[in-house]
Image (tube, rainbow, N blue to C red; front, side, top):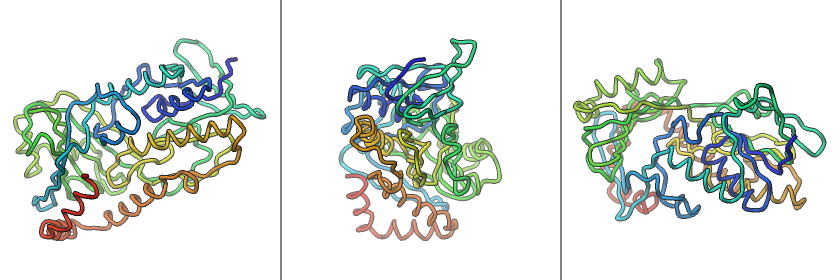
Length: 370
């Protein structure tokens, strides 16, 4: 039975970045991914802030477009825009993006095992025993390790006995990549609000190049009466603005996924057990974005694992109490609760105030787009 210092369960960008940091520190690290190929299937809209690339020295081969602002449309179809002189975010091909980070982990010394599903975690004194099924083998197998990182995504199996059963909230998202789409500017995304089309969240048009765009939406599963696909069809065919912009469009790809928006899980973790990414609730509830926060948490987790394995710090830690960025994630959960209470009429009034308060918009640009 192989013995590793660290096993990361989940080969997404956050899991692989955690593996990069532990392997870089000299620990024997294995990444276990249930799918046959890293980066598939794709779930995310692919908007990643520039500072994520800068802070973590990420490869830029996945970038398909550069964004420096956004248009915000209220339910009554009026808008305001914010922008900055320089690029604020990149739109990426998520399959390539994920593969690039996996390669980064491998270059640091991590091993990656695909087509492998972990289904049970056992603790034996100072070691963990991970039970898994691999398509390469006909029977169950085991891996022993000193530390486990749960990076399974929004529905973690290994965390099932630890996470709270109440207060777990999710968004359901769906989007299409389309050709022949109209949009305001190639370097600006467009965000659309309104309970009829986007209950509990918003829709978007994200330009990919001069004529291609990613068009989609998320809905709060508690607020939506229908599945996301129904709202997407309604958006593409009936929305007063979006339907006109996609009238001549051709759908090339459909994809989607689930996003946790409950904030960081406040749970006590066993020694040597760590949780990152969507599994840990490291997602901004206001936007559904989790890449940048997740990468920062991957680095922090790598540091915590180093302390644990070198006996510098064996204490348990809570994600809410100990991780440096938890407060900011928690604050977005507070904002999401506030936004969820607003009716379409409330949103129209709020947008009207924002359109008229030029100084306030300038502050938004300075804080979030600079």
